[in-house]
Length: 89
Image (cartoon, rainbow, N blue to C red; front, side, top):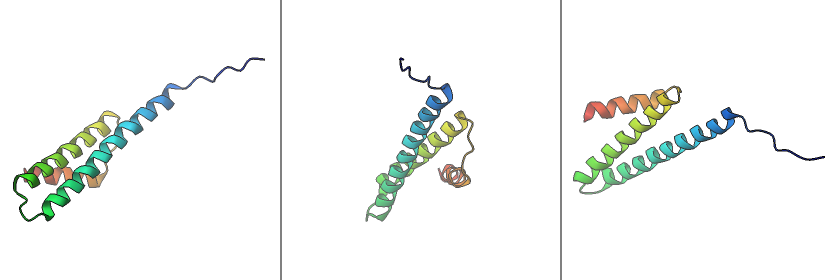
């Protein structure tokens, strides 16, 4: 009796890649938020604050585009924050 591995369904491997991509992008959003928070708290925010705010807006946009690409809904909190930041730029 031989043991053969079961075939991996395409959906399972694709789901894993989607989860990995979105997790990476969400971690980038959290990192950008932390950097912006630190820059906002410094005595001389200046250009650092603007670049961190731009990084956060870019991260939010990348996450929203990835969700749309995978045909997933954009959470209202992310959508609203992205619109707010785009309106401020």
